[in-house]
Picture 1: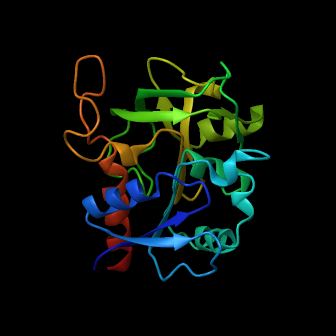
Picture 2: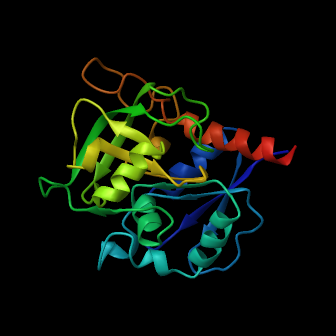
Length: 235
């Protein structure tokens, strides 16, 4: 079977086509979905892409979290569907309470873009199984509201139960608590992260110099992991 992975476009999404391309390169079938619909079109997994949904008014991701299609996203998450929120999509997931905590303005109060080193902390999720725990990867990062926060009890639970999926290495670019770059829900099917794996899926795309990203393919594992998870679940 071919894994059908939906990518939801919201007003202000700007990385939806990149996510669709990443899915295609991973061997899946990308399916374009619209924020105002209640139809997930029978997809096997979902990606909430990066961008500036609704102009980031109120709070980044807060309005998008109330979009009509999010009712179906919540139902799908509860049933175990693999769901990935990238940057603005991560913000939507925390605003929709599908992931704990919140994301606030970067500590230095500026938009940041860089090739970011990450450590894979949890390789047992639907989106990370093609990585190894402890593996270091490089993924582009671009955000203004990427500071991950949570109360002390929530942070302790995330750390203690292996729900920190990715951690910043070398530099904490936005002041995130515990250097957290991405987290996963307790079931292992919903992952959110601030860096952009969809921008690192093809050799030659993304800088390959000693001063910058060493390759353009470190993000592909997110999407191949999901494709394999969907196929395995269908067997």
